[in-house]
Amino acid sequence: MCCASLILNSQFSILNSAKAQDLHFSMLDLDPLLFNPAYAGFFDGTGRFGAVYRNQWASVSTPFQTLTATAELSILRSTRFRNGLNGSLWITNDRAGSLGYGSSAASAIVSWFQAVGNGDNLFSLAIEGGIGQLGFNPENIALADATETFHRTQALYPTLGAGAAWFCQWSDELYTKAGFAMRNINEPDVSHLATADSRLARRWNLYARGEWRHWPQWSLLPVAGYQHQGRYSELVYGCDVRWYVNEHPRDYLAFSAGLLARHGDAAALNLAVLWREWTFAFSYDANLSRLAEASHTLGSFEIGILYMIRKKDRTKSALPCPII
Image (cartoon, rainbow, N blue to C red; front, side, top):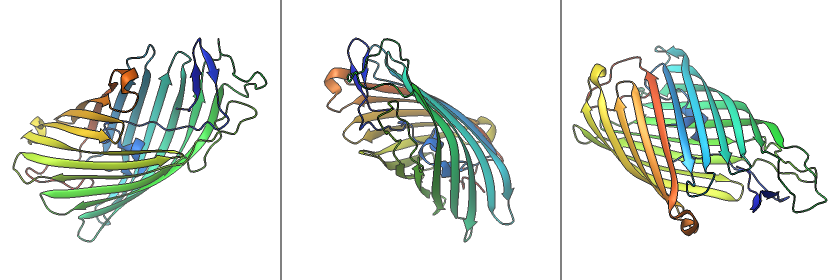
């Protein structure tokens, strides 16, 4: 979302120093491609399809609304060489305010994974290329500086990204995964004023997730992530608890619940149901920042759905490798 000064009576002022920011979600695992392209194909199956909807700042007249959808397919997998190639696509749409200012984007991802050692370690690399659009409805808009003119109300731009990820299966009870990614490597120009040069800043992030299953039907899944873009940064951390009710492939059922903190900003409650090949998830975060008084502590809610085409049965009471 482009940082801009919004003035009452539908007036719109864009600062020459304005910068743009990417989207973010509280359900980190339900849309992993948005966090790191190297997680494309990083799952136990041959295909994965998902969608997430986010509604933020419901206390204002026109809330922020975001929708993202992803599709991942396995292109090539070699049991002999323990590696593979994956292709993925994700699209997003984001709108906010009475001016309808928002963004749309679509990206294609190609990722490659390789198992090393005895297969308990996996490394993944990915490249990403896409196109984005930022714009608004110019009706009933006045510029604070009458000498400025709109160069364009819709900014169309290319974007590049890359990522790396690592997975380690330490034992049947414990796995960890971590990743690093950078988006907007080319820092595209997204300015709307002829006299301004506003670029989409590079965004880089770190992410780590683990699962410890010391109990037959219960596990803990701690998570932490950090991302930085221009003058802005975000630190999230939390933990989920998962209850495995039935692990037979045809009747698989598990429930998950957890708390996630966005440092200095919000606290989120995440809930999920995993049934057969489906995952249904819900998240709600309460605003704890300095804007809590204006927002009445109302933050955002997210709903998501994920479908996976599995290639093999699950291993009961174990944490299977996500790929091979």
